[in-house]
Image (cartoon, rainbow, N blue to C red; front, side, top):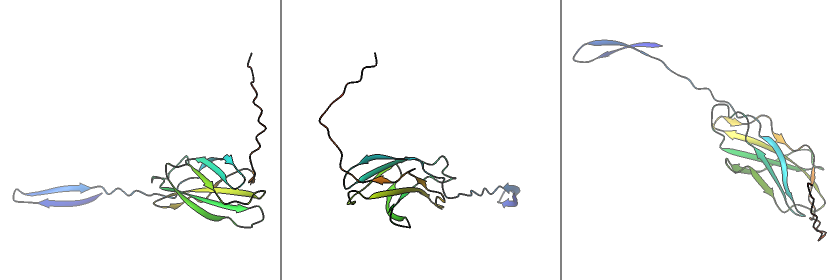
Length: 137
């Protein structure tokens, strides 16, 4: 607290001011990163927001990607908060890819990335033309 005095035509009034400092940090790790769709030239991944925004709203997600042949991940997109999926396009059929997702807020980008548990191969969907009905009786 900081003591100050307010002075006007009526008199002098002692007052205390309490300063509140708000410390924010980079947000936590995005959760539950998983594959939503696979095609011969695209892969869609989705995720859930971090458990903690560390005092400031998440504004964006940074999507990082690499092939299994590459050593380092590269940021390929920034997705606005509220959109919790990304579709990587123009991929090479038969190539395996890995994805990481980081959250951003006013203080920075999450240290740890949410990531898939396994590489995902871009491949054509197989349509057998058969439909199956599974009874629960």
